[in-house]
Image (cartoon, rainbow, N blue to C red):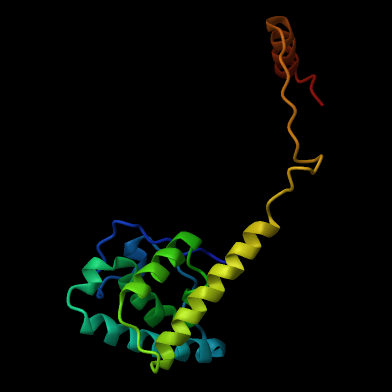
Length: 164
């Protein structure tokens, strides 16, 4: 797995725009530095479109807490916040975005949706990469019946440090 931190959104979190994403249970990447100013600008454009979208739908921040937390994360960390979100959080964000009336002509919101899709696909590929094959002899576990005396002998051997 990659070393990047995951942003985990609590499903029952009540998120207020003024709260920090950390208060919503997020482990965010460090704030963007000068070298990542393009990413920060891109994230701020996404945030403004998301803000306008959430402002149009009354009560959406309370009803869609993952999007409200994403709004804060985009302000603080730019577009780099999206790939750092956990797969479960990204799935919730995707579901909540699909509920809202997205405009095809809103470039930043379409960019955000595409970034969420790419991040979900990338995390799925990483997860598949790290799963061991069931036919791999290194990952195969063989279970067999043993007697109580076999168990007691193995326990005594383990306690005496006579293992491998």
